[in-house]
Image (cartoon, rainbow, N blue to C red; front, side, top):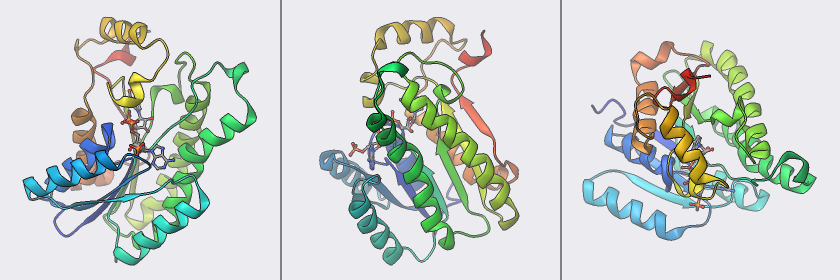
Amino acid sequence: MKHLLNKVAIVTGGTRGIGRAVSLALAECGASVIALYARSRKNAEELEKEAEAKGLKIRTIRGDLAHDNSYNEIIMQLQETCDHVDVLVHSAASGVHRKAMELSDRQLKWTFEINFFAIHRLTRDLFGKMGKGGSIIGITSPGGTRVIPNYAAVGSTKGAMDALFRHYAYEFAPLGIAVNLVCPGLVMTDAAKALPELDRMLNITLDYTPTGKLTTPENVAAVVIFLTTEAGSQIAGQTIVVDGGKTLLA
Ligand SMILES: NC(=O)c1ccc[n+]([C@@H]2O[C@H](COP(=O)([O-])OP(=O)(O)OC[C@H]3O[C@@H](n4cnc5c(N)ncnc54)[C@H](OP(=O)(O)O)[C@@H]3O)[C@@H](O)[C@H]2O)c1
């Protein structure tokens, strides 16, 4: 299915974990993909190499979306390179894993800088390049609406992101731009491996997931792709949960 030929897609956190799978899937649908990342040049080079070998169009841009100077450089490059933006996927996230009472103001602010303010800044700055048929997709987390141990900071940012996206969806739908969220269950990426109590979470997830399988980055990417199709154009402001049914259980 090459429904994204001649379309430009930007994926934040697009060189690692879920974002990497999304970048590849969008490119496989014909899009010219720009994958943004913060630090790991090695991951970026590997992705570009893999894309080239498969005849896909993916280029990467390095920079910290939460840092003013770095952000300005990224947005300048994007403004110069892209005449139009058709798909914008916000996958980048970071944050401090602590209990709520152990969080300092600085840690909470830093987590909000990348997981919330950077999302809004990038959306606002690219909005003028988007139009009818466009799609904005955020990768949220069950921690935005439920408790995950030691996830107070990131969970709060995801809850705020969910609310922001509902407003985007309402405001952008009349312009033909679809805004939605995809909410994966536990996916074994580098970020997940850094979670405190990972083994316990893994056991609980597998015990309580009716499909009996963990969600993969490719499962998430497939839903992102669906949302960029004509079929997805009538879906507005929804959160599509991709967790094998785990949230069905109390
Ligand atoms: N994994 C899960 O179980 C799970 C579950 C639910 C939701 N999610 C959500 O899914 C999304 C992707 O998560 P993941 O597990 O794939 O994470 P990941 O493997 O850690 O990838 C995170 C990506 O974000 C980039 N990034 C981090 N801080 C950044 C910054 N300040 N500026 C620019 N880029 C930055 C990283 O760049 P570098 O590679 O250069 O560091 C990396 O490409 C996140 O929004 C996460 O909250 C994940």
